[in-house]
Image (cartoon, rainbow, N blue to C red; front, side, top):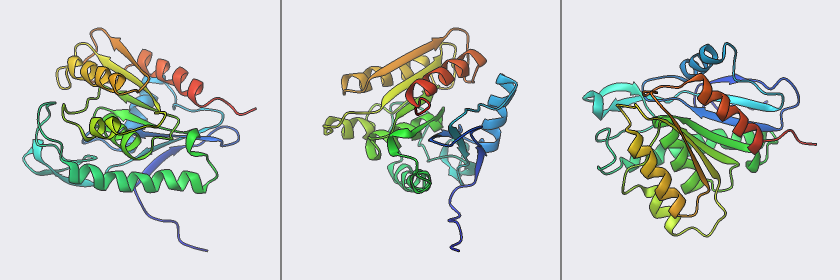
Length: 232
């Protein structure tokens, strides 16, 4: 038969039962799919697993990363700096949107409907997910962004100003003690998307820095099953 497309490396948690929905979780900058999966497994004391949902943790290819003085890092895109008031590195964002579209299409080829696919991630992974869904895949089941933000002049906002579609719901979590991605950046992103017609929620976690926590992942799991219920 045909060789499977190579595409992005990925770590996969298979559903316990019949596969009817898929979840794509995008790691933070410098991490890997394996690393993000292990972090969540450590917090929950088990994999984030479901009866009917396949969980996919892809790994970003290594590329030169400007905030690290051009050193190679596994990042979804480049940034001029880690700040919400600079231009986006749109070329690298758009190129990765194409690679991640291939990943979505792999699931569709496996018989999963587009409205049964959720995408999200931690930090840069959440930013990537918002670009992917709100600019190119407005028919996905939903988007989640944990400790993430969009730049003030984001291409996402420009795209939504022109959009007539019903948009995927956004589930956002953010630690109020985050010193890398300020809570206020997450809050502004949420307000802006809400003003552009996205149904949003923002869950704040007091004393949480730039990290994941067990209560946050439990809350996320509840939302995931609400957006991707077991099919009758």
